[in-house]
Length: 428
Image (cartoon, rainbow, N blue to C red; front, side, top):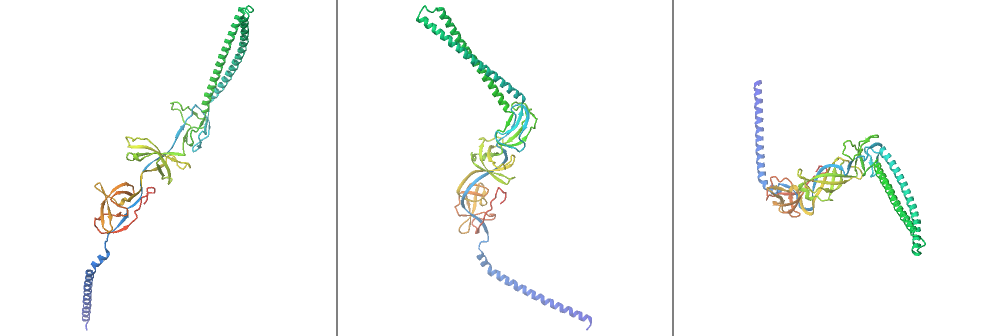
C-alpha cells in the first residue's frame, strides 16, 4: 500500500469517530432536556405551596414605656463670679501674696499697699484725739470746781434768807441780795462749764470719728478676696504704683482678676418654641466633651423674656465644681428635660410614615397580612414615638424597609431590635 493510501484511510477513520461522538452528545442533551422539563412541570406548584410567603419584614411590638423629650444646647462654662480687684486708695504695692493659679478664701489678704500719706494722717488723728481728751478732762475739772462754789454760795444765800424771813431786822436786806447775786452767778458758771464740757466731748467724738474714717481708708491698703476663688490674671508687681479704682480715670489698673471656681454658670439660649418647658430647678445634664465627663446641674435663673433679634431666652444653669475639675471657657453641652410621660404606648420612629400631613404605619395582623393604619403621635424623641390612637399594646409594626410593601400582602414577620442612637457618644 502506498503512502497516499495509508493517509487517506487514517482521515476517514477520524471522521467516523467524531461523527459517532457528536450523535452521543446530541442524544444525551435531548434526554436531559426532557427530564428537566418533566421535573419542573411536576414539582413547581408543590414547592411554592411549601415555602409560603417569600417576603420577610422586621417588626417591633407596641410596648408601654416612659418617654421624654430633651433639648441639647451648647455653650461655654463661665465662673459664677469673676471680677477685677482694684485698690480703694492709691499706693505702692508693698507685698503681693498671690500669683496665677493661687486659690484664696473669702477675706484672705492678696496684697498690701504702702500709703505714707494715710499713715501720717492716722498719727495726726491720734494727736487730735489726745488733745481733745485733755480738753474734756479740763472741762470736767472746771465743772466740778464751779459746782462746789455754787454749792457753798447757794447754801450761804439760803441761810441768810431764812434768817431774814424768820427774824426781821437781824440781817440786812443788802446782805441777802448780795448772797443771792453770788448764788445766781455761781449757777451760771456751772452751766457754762457744763456747756464747755459738752463742746470738748463733741470735739473728742469728732476726732475719734476722723480717726475711724482714716483708719478705714488705711485698712484698704490690705486688699482682700471678696469671695473664694482662684487668681486667673495678675496685673501688678512689687513696687507698682496703683491708682484708686473709685474714679472714672482710665489710668486705674487692677491688681488681679479673681474667678470663683467651685461654681460655674452655663449660659444657654433657649429657642422660643421651648421656652414654655423651662422651669427653675429643672435638672440638667452638662456634658463636657474635652473631659469625657457629665456633671449634674440645674436651671437656676432665666430672663423671662424672648429677645427680638435671636428669638431666644437667656437661661443659666448652675454647675457645682467642688473638685475644681471644670475650667473657665470649656465647651459644654446641656441636655434639658422638656417633658416626660410614663407608661405610654410607644413604637420606634422607624415605623412611622408621614405623607400629606398624616402619619401611618404598617401592621402585621394575626393572619400575617399587612395593614396600613393611620395613627396619632404624641411625644416623639430621636428613637421612639408615643402613639395616642390607632394602635394597641402588643401589635406588631413594620420597622424595616417599607419600599414595595402594599396593604393586604402576605409577609413573614420577624421581631428585630432597633438600634438606638446615643447622642453622648455619637454612635449607635
